[in-house]
Length: 213
Picture 1: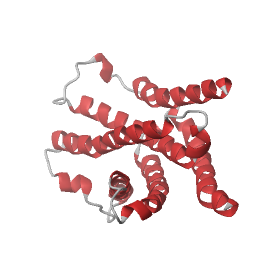
Picture 2: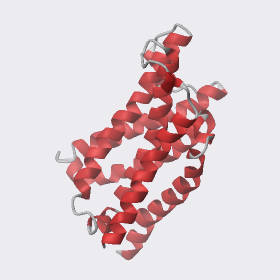
Picture 3: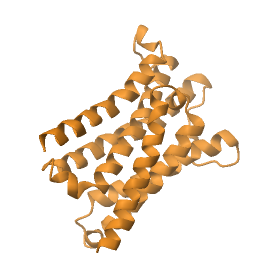
Picture 4: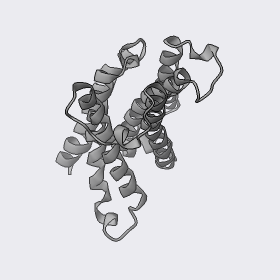
């Protein structure tokens, strides 16, 4: 059991290390002074939030799918899953907010609706809009979890977890077609892990456990 704990914790640390290392390796902004008045610095945090958003979303997906067996190794995992979920949502939400600030400083237009409202008419906006839709669905899933003790959601809130799988697919498609750091090493090597992990979690949670019942 101890060896399993060490392996899982090590994998967790490596996953959290890779996004920051990828950004630092492909950016010189750390040589300057951090200021949100500098578009370069805003863009740095924008990229950082993007990579950590994807990674934390993947971790949350895996934890949610394999919660039952993992709690045998880490008894307090459910509480951490909830805490990390809130942190993850905050990081993911900061991504479009930083994008709004960045566009206002680069093109001089500050309109949050332009960064939050889906637009499928232009190819670049088409891929960006996948991320916007994913944010809406993720928000619904988060709210369902927070208000799961209500009379209606107490019986149905777990059904909203299916949104997490849809969100992850949209985020993967969005990040791969829009992001530049997603194609940089070592982060690019995580995509096969993301895909295999997603398919495994989906099969286990939605098919294997259903057949087992």
